[in-house]
Image 1 (cartoon, rainbow, N blue to C red):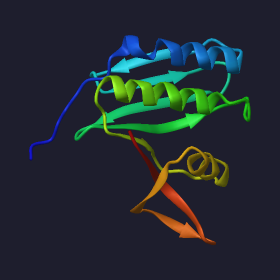
Image 2: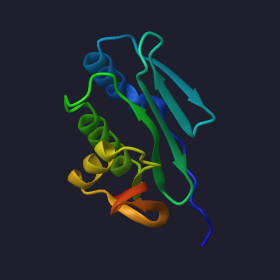
Image 3: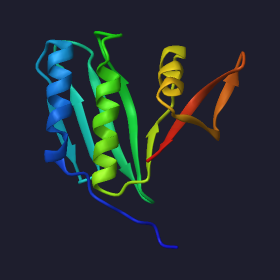
Image 4: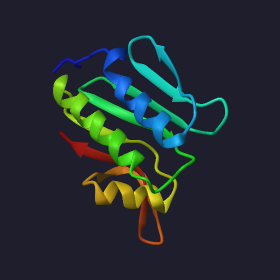
Amino acid sequence: MLPIEYNIYEKDFNNIKKILEFAEQTKIYKRFSYNNTIWFYSKEKGTELYVKNFINQKLIISRIYLTNKRKGTCFKIVNELKKYCKKHHIKELIIESTITKEMNNFCKKNNFKPIKYEGFNIDNEFYGNYQYII
């Protein structure tokens, strides 16, 4: 089976920019690259969201950092990305390379599953890639 490629459509990400600006109370900038990556960031704070596509119908959250935590922002962003995936027939949403227990707990609470062999276990906690099947 040949890989399926698709483009990221910048206009579909306007709601995410609004969510970030409201939650972080700062101006969020957006960079779009080669129809396959979109980067949201703040010049004033460390706020960052980096999303990329991947062949075979995967959308990947590569980096996310929010200054104002525990306000439901990550949940809102993930829900927007799930809608985007459904709209464009993307089969998987991946959160890549978790490095905190807080993010692991978010993944589990939102029905993301660890991807076996794409991470490691420390003290019975999986750190690595988590997958949500659309």
